[in-house]
Amino acid sequence: MPVRRVLWLVAIVVVLAAGASTRFGATKQLVRVNGRPLMHTIVSRAVELAGHSVTVVLGANAGELAPLLKHSPASVAVNREWAEGIASSIREGLKHAPSTADGVLIALADQAAVTTEDLRRLAGAWRRNTNAIAAAQYAGAVGVPAIFPRWCFRELNELRGDRGAQVLLQRHVDRLIRLPMPSAELDIDRPEDLLALEGNTPIRRRTLSNDEHQ
Image 1 (cartoon, one colour):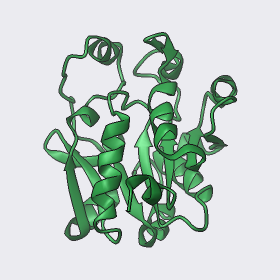
Image 2 (cartoon, helix red, strand yellow):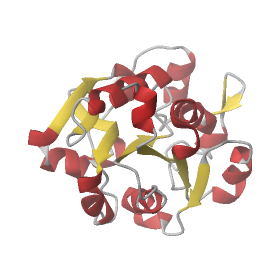
Image 3 (cartoon, rainbow, N blue to C red):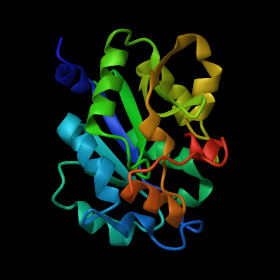
């Protein structure tokens, strides 16, 4: 079965940083990388893989970000409870997963070094055992991008506050497929992270906290 066929059964939820980007100092999704807003990077790669099965969750800056996606096949969901933390964005995205979806792939839009091929490899790993959770492995840990089967949906909906999908990865280590993905180590939290992306140079994450690995 081709990976493309599997992705018809998986909804992809791209969670943009829903807060006010205080660490970056500006609306980081609007910063241009290679002539395009940062937010387009992983959204376009997800769309390349799964087309209309992609939902982008917006939060604090939804008003200025949503128009940038008007020509994208991805659906836009606005999280009105963004101040709660990342859990509310995951719940919002899950609301938009098709009832026929066997799983949901959760990715963060500030993991801008993750490629379409990375997502394709993750889908391929999950295809070999669709009852397992397939997660990226990097920086000595596992995190998103990750694919959660339907049996995880209830637990994802029960997440609250600034605790994200990392909770499930820690809880279900016996049902976890780990896929090495060094590119997922870089996320854009600070201006120096953007410089690392533009220069294609590796940097290490400063901490292994829930908000950075969800």
